[in-house]
Image (tube, rainbow, N blue to C red; front, side, top):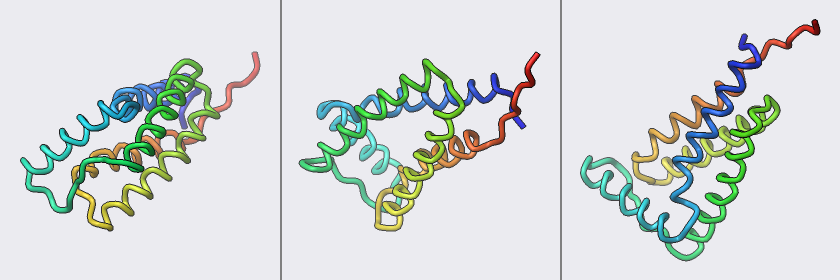
Length: 135
């Protein structure tokens, strides 16, 4: 069982990870660069599955998701509240479900490290937190 301070550190660590990983999704230009980078990694490693450059609706949805997650990450980082960690755990399990669906539909395995982090951070933010006793 975690104490409240340890749990707040987990919430902030997950928020910082999201800020770093999600920032490239927030604009069309950075999202296109990220797509090229991931496609290059995929090609260099010869991973199963495919990765396509984001265009049109996929670009718009990626930019919207990136923008919302950036704001959500700042709120979690600044506040570090346990309730935000609980909501974020749910969001991570949803993201993981869609990543698994994408992999099953032929997406490149370049997504696997991101999937592992989503599941790991989701589990960490689902752990029980010890309630502090009033003094």
